[in-house]
View 1: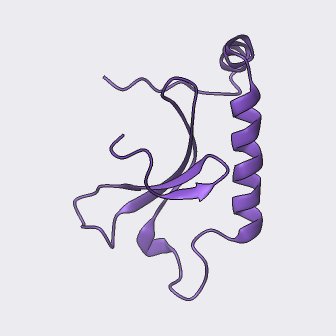
View 2: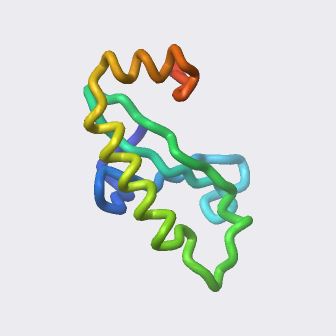
View 3: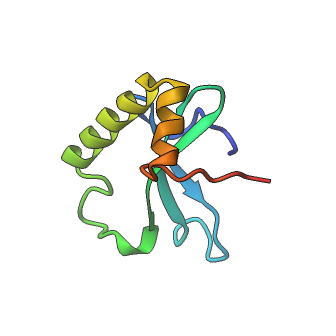
Length: 96
């Protein structure tokens, strides 16, 4: 993922733009957390044009929940993550 340090929302949570063929304003956004040797945890995604221009793109209570989830994942051991994968509580996506 390009520029993992950009788009920081605090608490290890980042909002990243996902390129689409429709340009920046019509592109998609995703919420991710970066932890552990380049592992990225994807929390949510949406198309930018589905969000009202009058409201917040990410409500404060939702952002707070993402930050809590980020902390939870940061504190999990590799064994815990393997268990989560085995129990299908997480889905691993491999790029390449």
